[in-house]
Image (cartoon, rainbow, N blue to C red; front, side, top):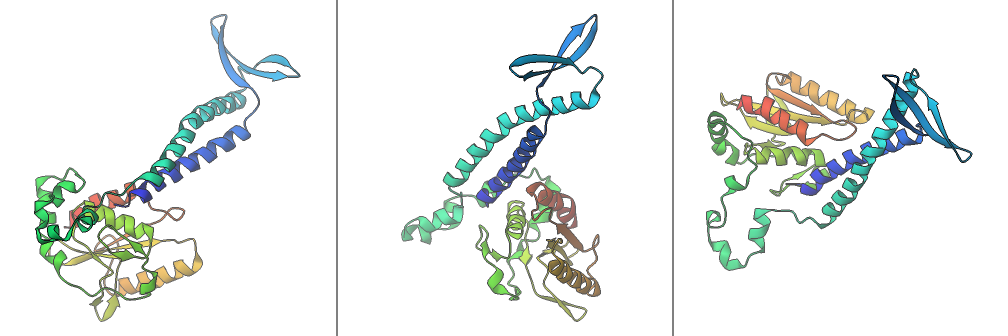
Amino acid sequence: MLYQDQLQEIVSCYENKTEWFIQRLASAPKGSLICQPNHGQLQFLQLYRENGKRIRRSITHNEPLKRALAQKEFARKALEILEPNVTTLRGAIEHIIPFDPDEILRSMTKGYAKLPEEYFFDRDLLSIDLHLDGEREARIGRHGEWGAREYEQSRYYEENKTVETSRGEFVRSKSEALILEQIYDAMIEVHYEQVQFINGIMIAPDFTFEGDNGEPFYWEHVGLLDRPDYARRNYNKLKRYYNAGLVPGDNLILSFENHGKISIKQINAIIEYEVMPRL
């Protein structure tokens, strides 16, 4: 798995939240909010220092100021958690050694290479447990033969395939690699950029799967749409898919990025609720 990428995604999330709370503090009103009883009712005060003097000002009926001071205190408390977390995670990214069973095997002496893989480990046990029920496990298992078949992979701008997955597959982006890693962990057979001719039209969707009825279905990661040139290419690609009979919601799954990223949570939701039911 791309552990560093997943940790980096968490760090980026924490850093974004940290920056947001820092900005909140920078724009917050002076002082702090205190609450005290006054003749059986709660009185809210703004406490701050001015010219060396301690000032207490009643703001019981000033809802915007109470809200702003409450948000200020929450931001301060949040930063006490977020900032150490970012430091800890950044240290983890620098020192973590990815766990890759295949790489461990390659590091062993040549004599061990003559032994079958099952002597060393059970690949299924090393995969992440997605808590699949028996029916889903059986459905996933039926596609093993299809997954092992050789297929033609697109060579379009092959030099752009620079990101390597844990299985040695080279893809075009970290987002595609993250998607593939989660598909691997779900033990689902997949073909990356398989060249196909449908209705006389050549296509090579990002991910091709074998459906329950033996017919393929596809997942296209559209990615960046905020760049006009990229959006235009994707529009032309999706139009070609439609002419070939690929229809979103039927045999085509689409995923998109938010500010240049796709979350692991989003990927797993697509796998669980869109890919698995079609297997």
